[in-house]
Length: 291
Image (tube, rainbow, N blue to C red; front, top):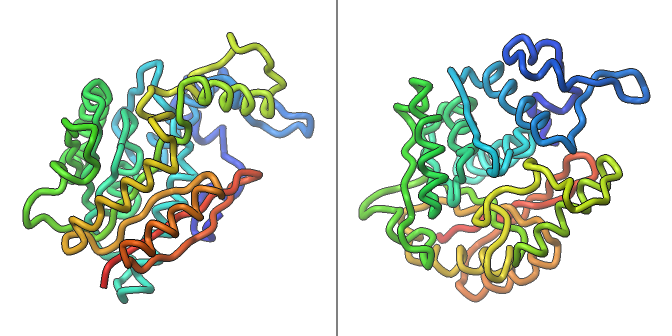
């Protein structure tokens, strides 16, 4: 993990539970006698993430209804830390500068907007094509004064577009972030979720799939999956090359990276790849810009 990520070590579950009492009933001991939670139980994962947001990011409240993706905060924070460092090194921007970011596909959880404001003191715009997700995200932003003042959630009314109709004329962003839908179908998403649950807790019954890996359709799968989504991001970014300093996206699949690099060369963009890892999970960030 990034050396400045505060979640590199084990969670202090006792401290977190003091900020969100619902977490207490999910705390168990692992074989080594250490306190943990069962990460295959969606309610436990949600309670942990809510406790982190209340304790460490000073949210007044946070509600995420059943059926929406619960974001792992340490990994999302890692992404933003790497983006901040790249901007600082590439453009000699002070690491404590108040940047302006755009999250493509912010989802119901709006996590990048929350972390951007509460941890980095940035201003953020989150775009989302799912109207119901927008209806969930907005009240969470309005609960906390700093989020209400520094986050704008925008509905993308045309699913054919990513940046279009979101980035306004003469509007400027220092960076964009995106966590693309990983799978190309609901069936593939369910298969992937089951595999994760098997790795976590030996679950083999599809009926035991739980919220922490379900999410809504727009969050987990789309036509063409991750590869096509990132290709669309790259192609459309050309239209806004004078309004965004650096475009970025998470890339989960190693094979997707080769296609992304091919597309970036085609549009004559500069690009950089940053590897990331959290436990056994490996991914990477692709960043591109136009000089």
